[in-house]
Image 1: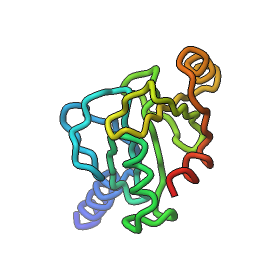
Image 2 (image 1 turned 120 degrees about the vertical axis):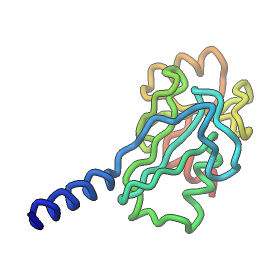
Image 3 (image 1 turned 180 degrees about the vertical axis):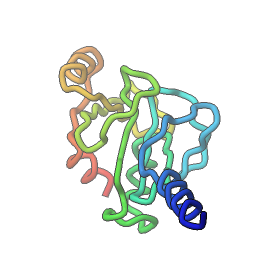
Length: 144
């Protein structure tokens, strides 16, 4: 009986420590950095640690400020995700996303940066609204 209880407790512990993303709860979640409530489902970001702790952000600049801080080491991060501008409430891998910076986009914390999961959509928005294309490395460098 003790072995069954031990197996159950270990299984429960393993299930509770999943390091997987979760959908942002717009209207409920607050930005970890600026503390504003996330309201617009085309903006947002999420960091998930190896141990499963989740940090939510309302704008790219809040995400970048967090990544530059010493709050969590880069080795402890499992996922970095951003909201896809054309797919509300959908998160995509931030390190391979495509970013467009333009004064035409009024983001929550004034980064004026939106993210896309594919390059063709970015190009379409860029031709309509102007702006500058940024890859992940350029985005990270811009916020240092």
